[in-house]
Image (cartoon, rainbow, N blue to C red; front, side, top):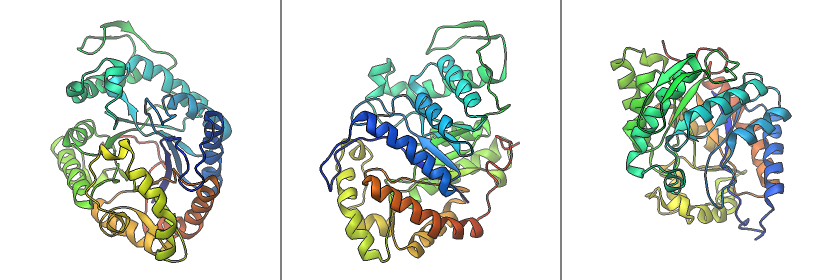
Length: 351
């Protein structure tokens, strides 16, 4: 199994200290966190995209470029690029440039996003989100794989004999499809033979398993071999301690604070409290053995090869503590237990 650290850059007052750090401090801390993740042996680092307070992740291409300049091995991911509201020409140019500056370490993850505020901001109606995503993805692929592109669609002006520059450094940048709530995302991924990344954060396992099963079924329908499906999955927070009781006690203030945010409420999570989320959801809270058991349980259901974690909201000291514990107590066991060739080779599709 491969492991990635995701960061949505939510700059809110710390629930234990009451302090909010400055934007400059937060962004510099993000770069330091990515460097720490690389030094600890994480395989990837992902930056989300949100447009509005309290998130500082409106320009993931810019931030990932800074991270690229401060790292040398770790894969760099977007989580997600909200392609439904963006111009594919701009996306093609920005991320091809980043791919060069990162030495070919870029993976792009696309989706409709999880914050309805971006639709009026960029002039897309929410009911058009899936149609816009599919159309813009088709154009993005053309721009990266073809030259002298002539194209016409609904959500941007036509193109005539356009070749975007620079061309990507990688022959095929792997494009993941973020999957959280709809079979429309898994359908688009399967149709194109692309991998999916399940958010796996706010609901019980069965909801996400149904989407992943649908993805594999549709891969077979479109002529791909579902046995070669590439799947990633997230989790609802991380807190390791020597005992479950200690982990729950220390993590509870952070969990309650986040689940009461507007961003969290949009997902209508059915879990009534942290204990319920640990028992019946993906929260990685407990001893190292308990967290390993939880991830293995989800692997049995999902068959995923990449596991994402997040330590957002914790103090800087706790973030480092948690990442170090996860890297030394959890990652080695799961790398032995679960094989994964993602990023060991360059094949980005399932053919």
